[in-house]
Length: 150
Length: 64
Image (cartoon, rainbow over all chains, first blue to last red):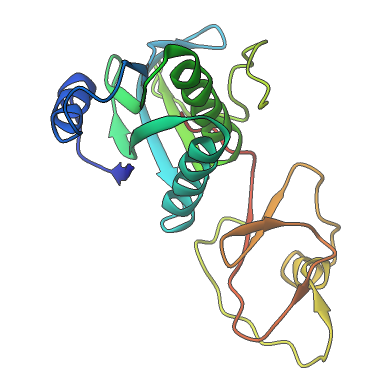
């Protein structure tokens, strides 16, 4: 398991591949990943930039807890979460979640669990800059009707 | 509150999260949407604090 909260931009697909290459060869039957990227719109407004603040220490702790819980609830081999904070722009990767397992169902379920939990509980806060230059805090995440934590 | 951190001292044997909020927010009650953590674990307004605890109040989270 690997959890990284970092300010630097990252390539989620490279992170996934590098981590996968460190895993035992031939043991997993699949990897399910989620990559969250920054949109250039939100709540009907054009968004040009975003700053993501977090609570250092608590953020890592809770992401590690949820990865651990996922590994106890589903038969998964390994997982990685990389999450950015700081200043970013549209199309930048914000978060990578990837889960490896012998069979696909466990990887799908565990990956969904981790990203849903993270969005509900990990202490991050988005401050958006709109096309007009106005900055505002995002008050709530967009609701995914299937996002309930199981 | 808009503060990253602040150390406070309360001279009482029994102090809850709500007590601290009332002190730092001029007696206002804790808004329902405010999240609370003690030592980086989520808790609620009725939780009792111990000396040296790190208490955090923050708005709904918006990561991911």
